Image (cartoon, rainbow, N blue to C red):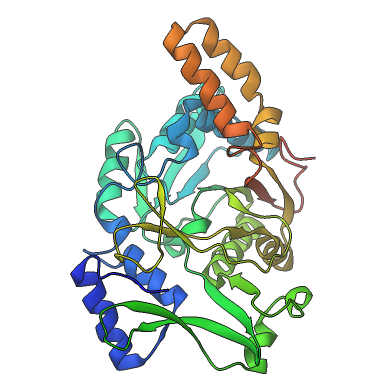
Length: 366
């Protein structure tokens, strides 16, 4: 596969790096084109919404954020109702989800007053959007998890893990190799290539997938595991829970899912680097294993449809329809369908909860 130049600044920077260092990993490529200052995809422009490249669940309907806000309040209550609680969102987009969550939180006596809101965000552009959406609240921004305060904490990550850099490993005739990115012979395009096969690479892979057939591709995200481990240890030490919502696998899988999306359509991953969103399905089994190894309890993953129905999205939609105009009723029904139907977001998207081992099973989980 080859790629066009796209943003010449991004392509030229990648080309220079490859000339100096040799072929780069897919993880390095993703980090470069998505979050490099000034030219990274998330660092400028407007990726979300109808005018952007994709729409996330909070943009589909207020019901999504409201139900997560209620889930947070219920979890807080079952934690014993601590008088102060950190509410942390990773990758908060335009602030829509947090805004809807806080509005719902205000309906639970005493809950909103306990909250200290923290947002993990690296994009200056998105931070401005979040400040506008959450202007009535006291919010603290962080570039990563290391500066979060101590104390009981609820972590929310909606469509965050899918954008984290991944590595790809392919079963070649010689064994397992890492898929890398290099320059074409004329140095005008980007190409995929393979590293030499090695037993060292094979040792990195899940044991259950090592015998996958020739041509199989395994995706791993070391940074996703690191973040899950950090969140798990924070919960273990200070109390709290985490809710991860994303599209992904619930069983170990040896299939490539790396994709790019531009203007709501699939786009070649290496074409026009820096102008499209790049993501991959989340490897939930590895996140579960990471959390359990850290010592917290893992619940799920379950499907987004089951999660939202358990929290009462059908009843909430019916309540909204009773006071809506004809046009609003159509929109509410369409949004409910999109969020929960198996052919839309309902099955592909999964929900995983992590809790302190002393807590009871959180709402919506079996």
